[in-house]
Image 1 (cartoon, rainbow, N blue to C red):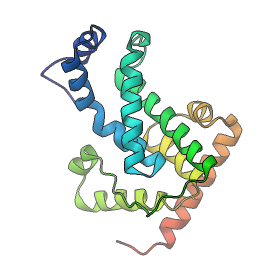
Image 2: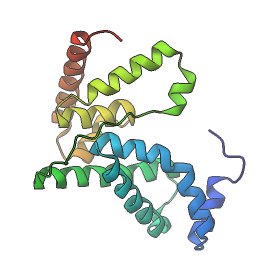
Image 3: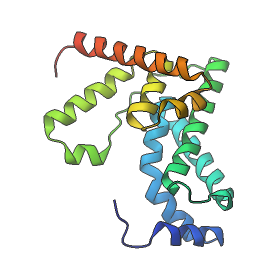
Image 4: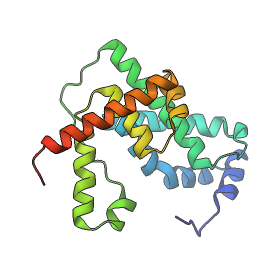
Length: 186
């Protein structure tokens, strides 16, 4: 996905110099993908929105620590995922229960546009079925299959051993397979 208006490096340099318009352009450019990442983990749009605000604020205040070893998007996504998991664990610890069950439909426009109708429906079915998995299965599969993290990265993010991570993901995949084969076809 190219951005002909301004290259990301130019915008980031302007952000370092305190240019609020550049910060807004960066926010607009990355918001949708980062929001989808957060909402997949915390399962609540309002909480994901709060996480987005905190994550972008953190990214802009710590931008001088970004060394360019990975893309800015990958660096930002790591901040969003860490904040999302932190909020999710905090919510679980406090055993907060929402007043209503919030249903959401995660749409990845790139996938939806590139896929034909049946592939898009199947992808949506997989995402909907993933919501039914145990939380640790859902989070580990989201990080592995959707966000593209490897076992080492997931074990660090989830603060579990490498072996436990592999086992969890294996069991999560099996659980997902079982649920998909038991579910009625779309």
